[in-house]
Image (cartoon, rainbow, N blue to C red; front, side, top):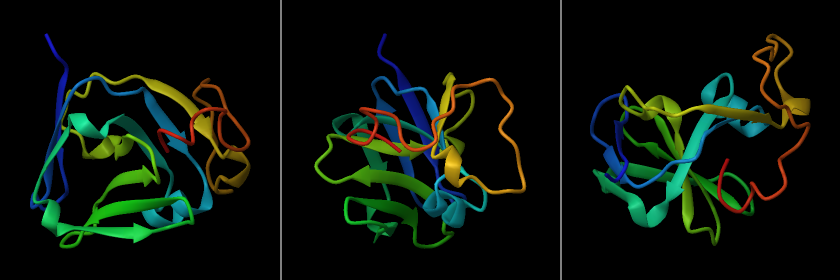
Length: 139
């Protein structure tokens, strides 16, 4: 049986389905993720070919760096996607997924940039910057 995951933005205008496997959840503490989310990102990812989006015309894409862009609902502002240029995978914000997600936590990245008002004490691996091999297919 093929994996299937569904999710949506806060207002429901954008919804999506992933028919295929998704990576474990990666927690990104970089300054961009903190500024967009107010804390840190918890993201999974999937092959872009496995993603079907309803309401795609209501996604605004923001070029957040020279190598990636972020997709969010233009109505409610929900952060939904992160896409590294040239990758065939797309990161999906884990909080946008319908429950149960059946995903597992993986590790923390860009811990050197984390906010000074919280700790990371869940026992997962922590990386000061990114993790080797991660940049081409996730965030």
